Length: 349
Length: 271
Image (cartoon, rainbow over all chains, first blue to last red; front, side):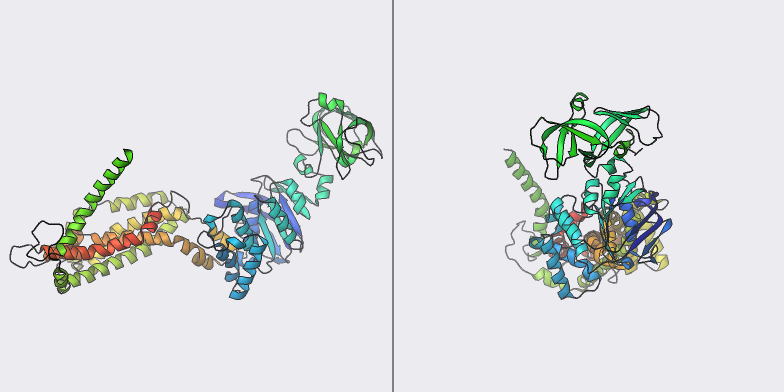
């Protein structure tokens, strides 16, 4: 497995669209799975294409296992890549599609047959081996593309651009197969990124805005969409005179916010709404019950009146809560733990 | 009712298209005695006409010339048009948008208009009555034809496959040979067949730029068939020769029919 280091790397998009990836520095350790999260157009695909050697790199450096590799040809990098919307080779049957990477590497025929059979088995493609790509469904084609990558004998790393987007169950299996193998996994879905990544790198408009474990990102997210990787209660509130006014109560501000008084979006993690600890006491009504992990759905009369999209709050309670009860639970919320976001941009404040 | 009309229309088209061919086939099987009997079915079928044309150097030499000049034109046109179409599809350069319309302008020049000047020019250049003397004018039409066909086909090719192959560990040469070439093959084949048909069928250049066995192709040679008697047309021999030159084209068209249609409609639907 290869260690991948990006040092202030910039890269051009396809068809000479100019530089779309700017100054990305990222260190992917040996055997680490890093998820690249970002909206469409944020530069995920360009980042992966730069790594495989198919994008122009005007500045910055790529190192593979410490060796400068920016100028290496794709074949020399020994990385395996699944392209976002690339179909299988149309002129080859599924079997030959899967075999091509091995044949290119000069692997003997017997080994090729065995590995192709094994990978087809893993991906549920065994019965389709003699079919042509045009005879497959969209999901099956995506599996063939992934199979071409899995079949390779120990590539340095795996670069996956929205793999198996049509197939969540197969995606989970793929994540299991990649455990302990250097992988970059691009996805527009932050929840998927948090689920698959040992660490998550967040791209926005061609720049890396945050890198960290899913827990670190949930703790100090740079934006609302990153914060939403983990369960989060989102309320509208108003900042005024050193206090944050919420429909469920008013919290004192514990840190200065560089912002004129006005509306903000407030994120409250379920784990920060508990019966014990420190903070402001907020009376909430127990709603429809508790999930096995202790997350309870609570209600506050003011939330229903404020006509939020979701009038309930999630909280983590120690006490067993009887479903359907109308018991009032005094919940504590530490004002220092709430997250504030700009309602326009979603940036953390 | 609508169906009936459909059948009637198809039958009419079929009759118009097939009857002349059937008539020539029938003529070629008739003996000189019955060749003017105006019957479709030969009363006394004979292969005598075929025996006679294959026995004459006029025809066999012409056949060799036709095949040779046709293959040479095809090979050159495809070999030159393939990289040209590749460049027109894949590269960005100044004046690119003008090239295809210009080649079309060359191709639409009527052969009759240039046959006369070429006759004089070829005599001066000693190209008159030689293979190159026909191959060169054929290329002036075949090259644009092949470039148009191939450019349309290449535009429809999934070029991202070339990059996918590189990501799969292929060198640029391997990606070209194992992925691009197989994908491009149907288009190249289509262009080759169209060019060969054109060269094979040409009459105007063949009759005006040749004077002997050295380079006269079959369509031109038909005009020089000797009759059995003076002033009588060698109808049976001409018919037999016509059948012989039509059959390969027909067989090729049938064999490659699906590819031809696929190639000609390339660019309409992505492969």
